[in-house]
Image (cartoon, rainbow, N blue to C red):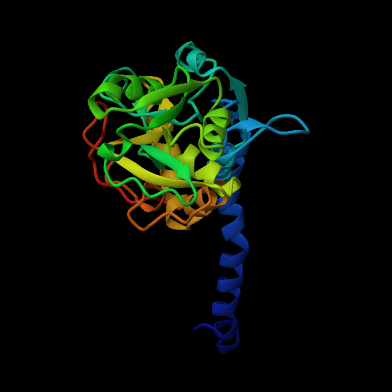
Length: 291
């Protein structure tokens, strides 16, 4: 027969043992993550506000902060290199990087050749106009006006392809800040660029405001991985989804782009499966993020 005194203390002792043992059980997983080599990724370090130089050295921006947060969520260190965008995918496929932290548009042409996480931002073509200018309600409003673009960009190509159809002229500038300044000074009626770049400029230039969006150009901005890296893609996407759920991605978006993303934004949407729905290498298997 057990002693009443021993029985009296058995439950508290068991609870204390469980409390002491829990951290010990958690240590192997944490130690395993810490023992892994740093994640390696790269950005285009000239693409503000996603990644651009810091005065004290290195790079800063939305994508830098986002992927550092993802690495912390995974319990991993991360090294983020800065390189020209045109060389990023070849370097990743050659094994120099585990994945890319640069915002990369998911397209039907790219998706068969690499793996993508779900989108963390939507990229869309957007116009910026001078404060006080009547808002653009349709592309017909551009007739007889001048449109500024960054020379050689996708927006430059779109403007040239559509100038005759909608009756506007195109002013191509060597840098995006110069294209924005053309609008502020009145040399151009509107600037066409990516939505995040337009929003960033508007948050820093009082006379420049974000305006009409070409919604048909919407696509996911995502992190690409080389083929065969399904396991790492799933781990990064899991961390990304946790940061969407706790509001980190939306907070970083508001910090860097100047306005709070809505509930249906990519920053706040945990997409089903793994990858971008409807694209090659998308895995529709249902899963819940483990945070």
